[in-house]
Every structure is written in C-alpha cells, then in structure tokens.
Length: 96
Ligand SMILES: [Zn+2]
Image (cartoon, rainbow, N blue to C red):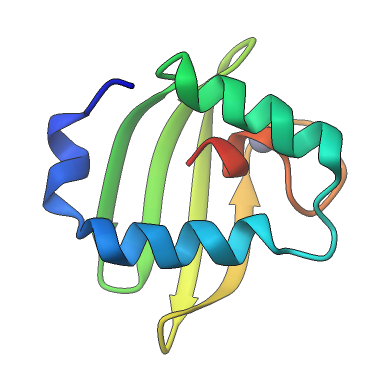
C-alpha cells in the first residue's frame, strides 16, 4: 500500500472513522465496495485535503474524478463525486 504525503496531514484516526461510515453506508453495494478497494490498492487516490468540514480528493479511475465529503459533527453529511455513476456511493468514494 502506498502512502501519500498529503494524506499524512489528515489524521489517520479521522480518516478511519469516515471510511468506516462510508463502508457501512446502506446504499453501498458489494460490487462498488470491491471496486473501490482495488482502486485504493492501485493508488488511485492522488490528492486528498481536509479543510474545515470538507474532505476533497482526486481519484483516478477511467478519468480523474473529484470526490468531496462534507462532514458535520464528525459525521458524513454529504457525499459527492464527479463521475457519472448514478448511485449515491460510487467506487471513487470508497477508494478514499
Ligand atoms: Zn465516482
């Protein structure tokens, strides 16, 4: 597994918590989950930044996509990805 310098600025504890919440999302399907995991292993997350309550990252799939996670009181309030997938949680968000 590859580490990204920018990722180190974000607390691992925090990311783990957000990640768990995403992985337990009711709208997340098994297929998307495993696709997201393989994207993560490939090092598809090339940029991640946390400012205030918004976590943004660029995830490279077939194209680079912008992923945005809006947080409120340490919980996910809104998930956003610029890819055309029409479900709520896509593989790029899982890759985070
Ligand atoms: Zn996506």
